Length: 105
Image (tube, rainbow, N blue to C red):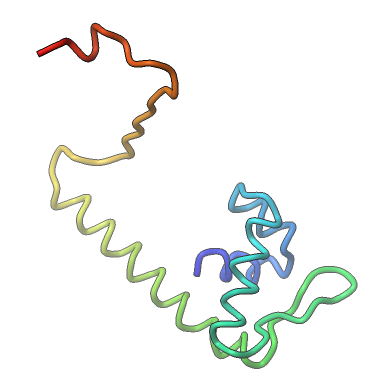
C-alpha cells in the first residue's frame, strides 16, 4: 500500500522509488501484482510518468486511510510505551561463529 500511494502521489514510478529509497523494479513488481489481485489496472503509463485509472482513484482512498490509521496507532503505542521507542537492528555474520560469543556448555 505504501508503494502504491507513493507512486500515485508522485505520478511516477521513478520518483516513487526515489522517495521510498528502493529500486524502481522493486516498486513496479508489487504494484503490478496488486493490479492483478484487484483485477484492474490501477495506473496508466504516460509519456512522462503515470496517472491513476478510475479503478486506481477508487482504490487510492482505502490505502491512504489504512496507512493513516497505522501511523496513528504507532504514535499512540509509542507514547504509551514509555521508554521504548525507535528501531532496533540486528546483524549476523555468515562466517563461522566466534567461540567467545558461543561458549561450549
